[in-house]
Length: 626
Image 1 (cartoon, rainbow, N blue to C red):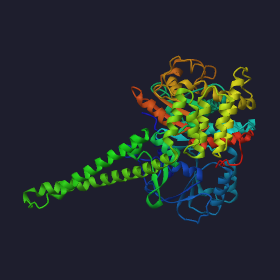
Image 2 (image 1 turned 45 degrees about the horizontal axis):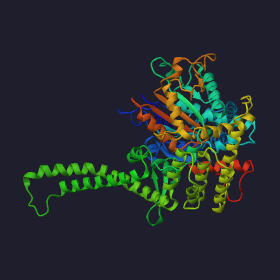
Image 3 (image 1 turned 60 degrees about the vertical axis):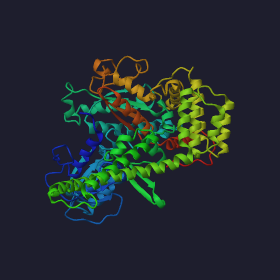
Image 4 (image 1 turned 180 degrees about the vertical axis):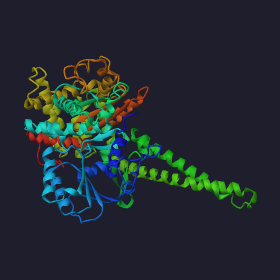
């Protein structure tokens, strides 16, 4: 069975809501309930609220006996004779709050669930706090849930680590800060693998953050597998009969352009332009009233058409609307009878049958109409933004620039002086800088002048320019020892753009495949390939001495892959990987994850922060990173 991360995480959450009792699943694998109904209170922190939000709706909470739910940091009144389920991150602040709640006897019993493994010192603080306040008997159980990641679709997740790209590329970052970030990423990835109950073969390019994450994750899995009853014991029994997945780890600098470019497909466009967050969207409707929409696996239109170009989506909405109208007319015709026709008693049974069918089809028709109305609203809002900012031109020009490896000077200036927000122009300028292999200083100066004319903060542009020049000078330098993490930040600059500039010619090949997708395809196929032959191979189940060797089971082909992007991912890469998976015969399965899902604008803001840290660009009009 294909790995379904959303389903697995939902099952874990439902078990947690049912006081960690095994949940009885109804036939058909739907959402089950525990043996006996227990009414309870749910307490969570903001991070865990984001984990729950895309997976569990209020009606689902009611179904599992949750009558009240609160944030842990809010003042709450006692509710006696009721158990409380806590779902929080293992932090000092949360532990203090839990100890305070138990000492005040807010609830009858406390079922404590931590989103990741609670460190020993914090567990001791919890125990001593509960003992000192004489409330230890109220704590029923403490569980490590290994759920510290946000699942947005069956095959899409985020670790919700904010500003990761800035932290990893900050020239002033020391060893300790870098190690802390790598540790946090590894902890999140470990949670994903524990939830899926799989130990993958790990592949990644050598050097940089991807190798650091891969090596530490490999060590973490090895240490965990030494325990007899580990989280992967169940899966481990079937190692001979089922093939393990491959985990491919990349760093954002592997392909910078995808994080910046304008995209014209429906899902990335909705995310980039309207700000889709945790599968929710707020759009201005008629008369300026804000409407809130959910876009998830329960929306058939979103799932079926998310990868289409926007004009095709508009046509599809029209088609669905006409089909709906036709079906409504059909129901009316069957139930309304002919106008002026005399009632024929012999057709009473036939009329009743039609009436029953009509009543049964009403809920389905109503649901279809709601979906059509929702996407009509979204498409209207998108169209307004596209016209106002000429987003179609930006997407087309950027694509052409990458294919041709350059753009006509007059066209470039007309875009930079034309429609679009300051951020649109900045993104386009950076795409031009990345895509054009050899640029004269006068051409770069011309772009900077045009940006300044539009009052655009050029810090991000200057940063990418600096990386590009560093790359050219580093190309001839020999590589220093990789173990020195401080030097690593500088070497990273060289690695970052070389992957982009050197691969410009095939960034968008004839089949419009991203470099990431092409590399994942090669890694899953497992055949000798110069692009990936130097990639690191780690098998946490193999003895340490043989890991990294070319054993046959490490090479593939693989049916399932988990692709992880450090430093920010997006819906463009997710869509491209799904296209790859579905185009294979038989279809393969790819899960895409990232440290955080970013729009092009959000990623460029992080580049701007790095530019300022290096003392580049103008500093007056940059938007602050949230």
